[in-house]
Length: 180
Image (cartoon, rainbow, N blue to C red; front, side, top):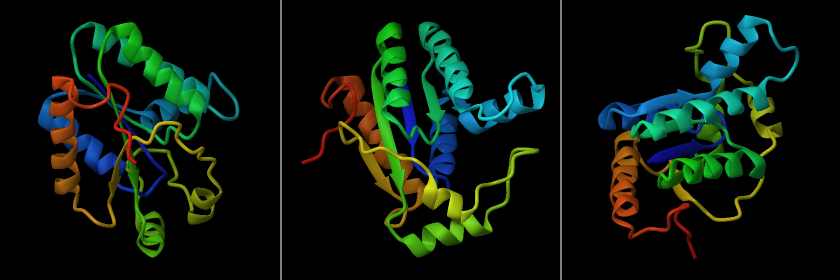
């Protein structure tokens, strides 16, 4: 199974994705770590976003083909990146659960962004202005959405686990839950 956590910086997706990966013993792929490694290698100049996603997609596919569950942690802001994750799941014949993480309380979201410290050496966390300016396209199919302004990380993990069970049982749509 491929579980893709998407959302703007500061919404809480890394906290939730890490814990879910820990509880399920899944392979954990964090785009920020991959992109920072590419920057430090000095092989690409400028924006490494597409390369980071390409590496993550390839790693996810190889892990899924070995029968591992994969948790991807990324902003996943555009249709192209979302379609790439879907293509990975199809190629691996794996179920896909898209999870969008939001923080509907703008003041809380801003506080999180402005007070967090980086946990990836060399990577400077984004500013609130850059989060507000971040490209983020509307989803074609509304994924499972977790609002961290209304739930704790533990509740978010529990909700995600319940949806994993549904997806694995074939009770939920394969490509993410549609909401009315």
